[in-house]
Image 1 (tube, rainbow, N blue to C red):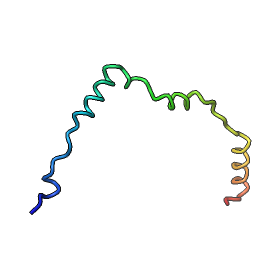
Image 2: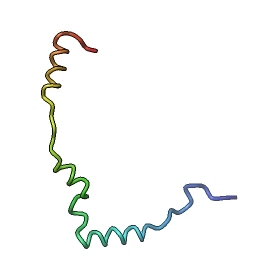
Image 3: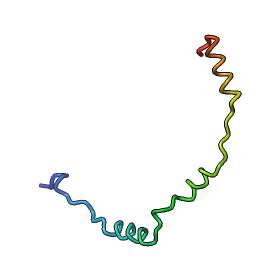
Image 4: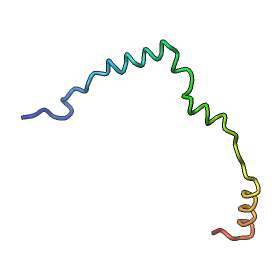
Length: 64
């Protein structure tokens, strides 16, 4: 007879913890990933005229 699924122990997380603490010592958890920094520095493009066209269309009663 085999053990129930709840009776099985999960794999130890020691290697994962070691890696996390090494990153913590180096201070890598304080700064964001470079991809996030690049997205924040990207200029935000807003098309106000397109938004106004949609508002006027809704005001006229055309909802679709």
